[in-house]
View (cartoon, helix red, strand yellow):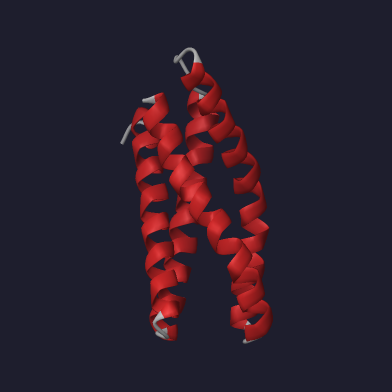
Length: 135
């Protein structure tokens, strides 16, 4: 694999993470706690692999500039900036949510999960959108 392949890998990992998150959400809504836990851990592992690939790509290749113009350029930067800010916020939120589940502190886990899930989903989806707009 070449460094140039990593943006597609990163977008794929973001999409997979989002799919795992959504499946985990559906499982908990259906009362399947074991499947929910497995899917959420899988989403965290996939997101962690993404982070490693993302950092490797940007360390070796730098960044790619958006080449669009007009309103699409403004839309791109709104999505990108919100994605970056929320991606930084979701890391400690996800760690806290997982920690609370591990400690079986269910009330606090649910409180954090209700806030973490939509942000994490947004980050996963906008990661794919940023890739599609760039490439």
